[in-house]
Length: 186
Image (cartoon, rainbow, N blue to C red; front, side, top):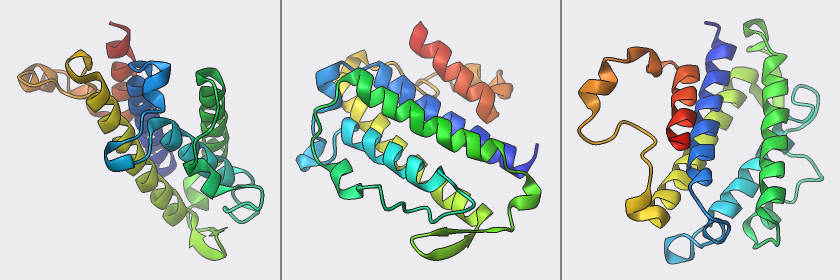
């Protein structure tokens, strides 16, 4: 597997985690503030969507922080329906996957710019992937806290490690993403 393919697969794994967590929530639960007045899942979704749209639109030819992005607004309450919110989410992921799909490992040493800082493409992708993992972890944590006993586990359920280990292929990001999707439909 190429490096670019591996990075894309990890993005897909994190998208599947977030989607599986979001799917378990009602509309009102998406906007419930986190502990101590922290970000709601709605805010985290809008923030990641804004980040992806900004970073990956014209990824190789313009600064990743676009003048049309209003980052601070991503952290303010918004009156979006669930459908509108998820449309923004999906559109941003399409932008990300289109740009990554156009890359090859040979391009990883090329330079892109984010907030005026030149970065090698591999550095920019890894930085973005870490940012994604951070916020998806928050989404999953908040969703689990909201659902409580009704939460459908998105990883290896307690007491099921041996059973999971007999299915080692799930450790590939793409098959893990498919496994997550199948678990939320159960």
